[in-house]
Length: 265
Image (cartoon, rainbow, N blue to C red; front, side, top):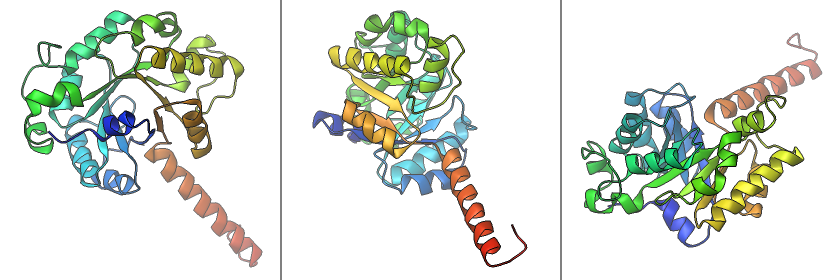
């Protein structure tokens, strides 16, 4: 079975840079994947991506050598198992709030005797190579999102779940939950209480011997998170990249037209 680059990086204490796709288009996935990310996540929770589109996107991701990861819509065995069958090498599952939920997530990802995953990896048999059944349990990455006040209360129980490879922090929901809605959603948090919570999750994960991952909105914050000790950082998604580049081009063009005395200002 083809090795999981994330696990290879982590085995040598290197942090991974993860991309994020919300647009259901394989060509967009191909363009983003060519940028040099270590892994790229197809977002099936908040992204505009259905199952059929995700397959083509993972094919495009793999063509550039990045690790295909899927954020499933919810803790549901059908979503998890079908994403794995389509070739995902990692699963990010949102809203894991208890040890019992983390155990269920692990069970959906592992073949017996380590879990309850049903065998039928239609595309994965071809994309992952030989010995998929024998090696999938050890190669696939299982990440639980810690992003609520309830999850923080159960943090130690969650991170100590056998078979869980790591936790993934969603800063927007974490900030909303811990502030009881008084903080607006957003990445790259600077509020002392949220930064403290982020560090608490990081330390709890490492204390349990698993990885810690953080969703960020900028290169500078991602680099800072790696300096803190995070094992994977996600840069902003394809939608934000497209919107930012488009806005920048329009603003620069209008500014140059105005300086030249044109009428486009």
